[in-house]
Image (cartoon, rainbow, N blue to C red; front, side, top):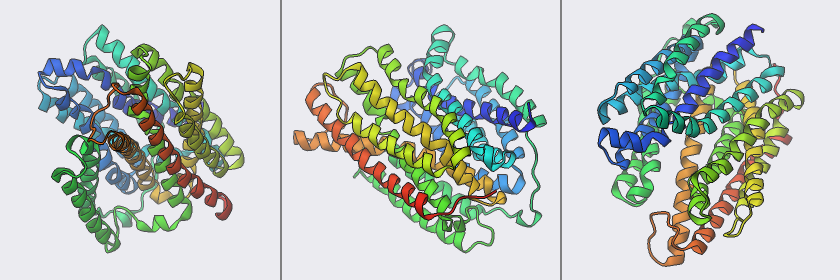
Length: 468
């Protein structure tokens, strides 16, 4: 096996671990809540704290990776992630567990900031699509493996076991990375870190994510949520001012003058946002409206990630042969058609109809992500790979969170308008109303997807191809 493929294996292990730990925890939350004597609302911070740390710090580590070397940041990420996992195992209180999860998130942010950059560094342009396609498959596998693996470990052993498995894998992967992840040459004249930019960016993202994640619970017009959005806007304005007037900024805004980079980032946000419209509503539709068992609903929901896992490497190979623009355009078109098709699901929809619509959505994800990632990373200079890769990861998390928040807000708003009273919880008491609100929400998602299709089409016809 060539050295670059051995490097890819190390990157795949890190990506699998960090993705798995987003999803594997969900099934263990009831056991954790019981063990730590807290309510389900409090235990959700086990998930939220992990995502929040990743989202607020991934851009910082991308910049540090460009300054200090991607290998250094990535390898230390493995160690910190493993340490956080060990601390989770020994957690006896809720506070200790949240701190441990934040340490895990710190390590995950370091790895996520570097994975795309390392792949772009070691693979030539003609093989980059295949490499990112394999990465996309591993991310999809991590997504769909989390719930069943978590259920098995919690049922067979205890909730601590879902963290324990990370430790030996993390240590072995770290040792492999020492040997197989190459170092790159660092420019000495850029060893200045933008602390002011970092602080304002952390405040911006933290305020945005906390507002999005808690908007439905508190009410979108409530003082905490409105204040959160105001803080987000003010701190983002301060961040922009600092970055524009700093000699060596954390985020170089000139990247966005590159149409290929900007279009790729925008399309990635649209893709993740639309796909995550189904995250909350679809499982509820299957279990509470169609009365499917959790096992049956779980099998049907796996159609999407399985399809994505199959399509991702194929789209990567296609990207290497014909470029990334056509696959990304087709992928977004499939995403639009998939979510639009799901808007026609009814009380009497067959298994076939449900699975076909989710298969189309999975094809859209699989076709789009790998070529788009390859295109974004190939459009920037080599000394900006760290910050560009971390921007990719940040947009993924922002798109996911926005998709969930926007879809639930649209769903409740439509349901409230039809009932003539405020609705703030999913209910199976009025199936026809649920179906109507779900249909409206998914059609709105399809309209949002059209914006991505338009940008992808403009990128296809108006921008030159990337050369090595």
